[in-house]
Every structure is written in C-alpha cells, then in structure tokens.
Image (cartoon, rainbow, N blue to C red; front, side, top):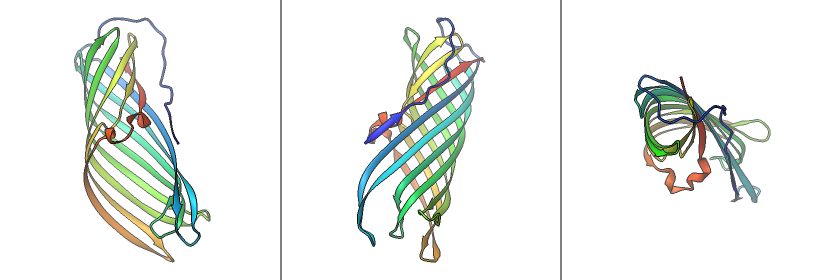
Length: 226
C-alpha cells in the first residue's frame, strides 16, 4: 500500500492580477513533501517470518532568488530531508527494526517560467546541489547496528506548474528529481557480532523519477514575490 500526503503550503488571500514578476524582484519560496509506503517481505534469518517494511520520507526546502528578467529566476536553496524505516533488514542477517537517515543539502538553481494563461505557469528548474547524510540503525533493544555518513554532488532537473493567486504569491505543484545526475560517496559501519565492519563505496548515477510512479513524491510549495 502506498500513500502520499502533501502538506499545505502558505496561503494568503489577495486579488488576482495579470503579468509576471519584474526584473530584480526578490522571490522567497519553500516546498514541503511527505511520502509513506509499506510492503511485505519474507525474512529467512534464525526465525523465519513475514515482515512489513515501512518507509517515510520528507522534504523541507526554503529558497531565495532574484528575477533576472520577467520569467527567469536565479537563486539558492537549503533543504532538510528526513527519512526513517521500520523492519529494515540489516546486512548482518538480523532485522534492523529502525533505520534513520537525516539529510541536509544546499545549492543554486536556475528556473524558467512560461505563461499558460489564466494565471497558470509551467516552469522548469535545474539545480546544482551538495547533500550530506547521517544515518543510523538500531534494533529493538536500542543496540546500534548501522552507523555512517555519505555525501553527494548532483545536477537535478524537475518541472512543475505554478498558479498565481495574488500579486505577490504563487502556489506550485512539482515532480522532484525528474532527472538526477550525481556522484555520491558513503562510509558505513555494520555490526557483526561484537564488532563493526566498515564499508566504503562511491557511485555515479543517472536516474529519473519516471521509472516509478511520480505521484508518490509530488511536492507542493509557494513562491512569495517581494
């Protein structure tokens, strides 16, 4: 079963106007998204069983940019990306009951708008990002089974639709990570018995959210024009 909950963005009431932002306007924005999914799997460890894997992912992003013309914005952003899983199978053959990953990121973005009429706008955004993650996994007795960190450099492209509800406010619906190109490096320690084994790896990846259902990770946000 898969469920998606889109958190409500900031809503302001005002009057509807025509036209886009002007050159040198300052745009402040944010995006919130949350996804939850669960699935069953068969565990063949010391006590075979069927378990339900549950995963939660969030994205909280704030951004600021400057209009370099009436339909183009250049800016920076910061993100917090929490993720947690229960009944997560660990590499040592046990069931890691709780896994948590706290991600932090930042970067620069370039965004282009196209007026579709009636205050609707199509936009495309490309960003260069740096992300850092801290991860840990514990069993039901609160013993640490996994610890580590990772970092990544990435270029990301994603589209969206914006609706201008007032002179100073856009509401947005987007599909994050439509195209993702990145290099990542990870250093993780996994407990085996009374000791930890260290695992290091690096990876270059090109992925797209079209390989899965993009509706599972829709984001809703806003853009405030100053």
